[in-house]
Amino acid sequence: MKRKLIVSGSILGILIVSFLAMSYLSKGKAEEKAPVPVSVKKKVKAEEVVYSDALIQLSGTGRVVSKNDFNLSAEVPGKILAGNISLKKGASFRKGDLLFRIHQEEALFALKARKSRFMTTLAGLLPDVKVDFPEEYAKWAAFFDAISVEKNMPDFPTLSNQQEKVFMATRNIVPEYYSIQADEVRLEKYQIYAPFDGAFSEVYAEVGSVANPGQSLAKLSRTDKLEIELPVAFDEASHVSIGAIATITNELDPSAPLKGKVVRIADFVDPTTQSVPVYIELSYEENRPVYRGQYVRIEMQGKKMSGVMELPRRALVNAEYVYVVRNGKLQKEPVVIHKLYENSFLFSGISADLWVVTEALVNPVEGTEVEIL
Image (cartoon, rainbow, N blue to C red; front, side):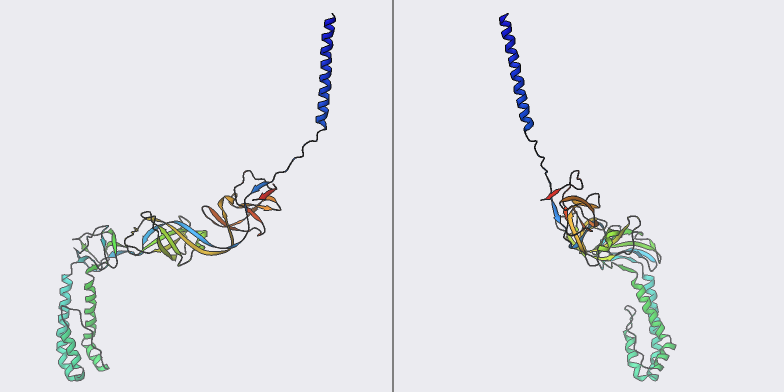
């Protein structure tokens, strides 16, 4: 019995001591001061707004076209004969090559006969000239001697006075002379020579077929003078100027770009693409071919723009806003976009005393206090 009382008293004493110890510790913690929260500012990368001049950079893909591309039509009738170049699509030629001929014997003999009749008429007039215009006889005799049915007509003598002019006109010498010259010019049209270096892009007739005046025979494309047709967005066409230098990257030799310059800017908009065609003359290099119909990459400088600033593309928010630091706090501001590049953009429209955030922010909140790095 006595032992039970001792054990119960011990347990009670331990509980009392534990309770008193817990009360003391709780009172001590309650008396400790609660920690004061510390405000942490977010750090951002930013640039001060400074406006200046900038050259607009334009780029795009254009198609190579021939500077001269035209249909070749027959001006005289006759059978088509072979020249020095195969009359086939894709055949190349050099300036001055005989492309093909048209059978001309009939026209040639008719011209010779006409010259012979002219010589007969003039021979019958020489005695009268010697009597009526003795001082002019020598030039007419020399003119008669220079006429040959195998050669083009010599220059017509100068008519010295009114009487001589009337005499020759009434004898049909003057009109007949110029009619013969017209036939000589016409005879040259039976031989078709290449007007430039190029190729047949289309052929509509075969050797041996008969050509008729006005009939399309072939389509010629110039290969030593090429242009690039570059479609430029309508809102960017005003930045392009005549004479602007372009860098052309050819897929066949991308390591060595070619040069060109803007020679024409269309004054209309292509209805299918809503773009303005810009034509760039290509500097031809024979050992670095560029082919008609090929697509090439164009990089060129446009006009100068004043009062703009360039920033990384990642700084743009929803295509029309940027975040600025105003009085140490984050704020979203609208901007005027002048040009969007692949990795940057040109803008204006905000105060020059602000700083623009140049990085993409994660879940930004306006009014957040920030610190500029």
